Length: 118
Figure 1 (tube, rainbow, N blue to C red):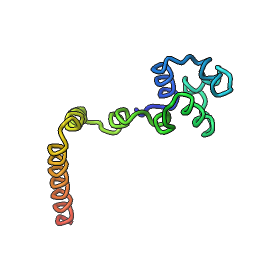
Figure 2: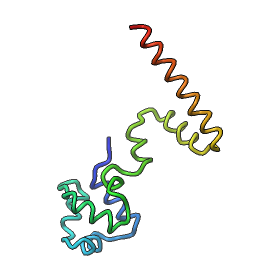
Figure 3: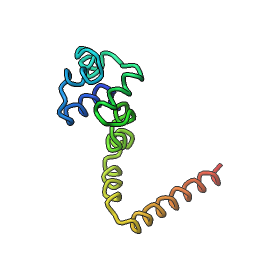
Figure 4: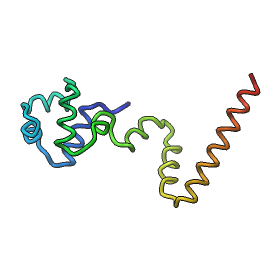
């Protein structure tokens, strides 16, 4: 299940050690609004999202969609594949390029086979 704005907001706010009241003060709103956002009971306007992002020093993209790792976990359903991709990212540049080339060649082969089968 994809992260919701409120879940991302709470996680980031807690990581930054900022209370709901402190965040509310930073963006000139009431803490009950922050609480409602974090419980996914209300969605802020894009202007409020921008203010929150600036106050917490994160991108609006991270607030809305989560971190790159969270996005990857949400989009890749196969845990083994996700684990392999995580490990591949730790390889040096030459090895990483070799893995990318292998994947591209394999996908190209499958695409070609699918086209020929039509």
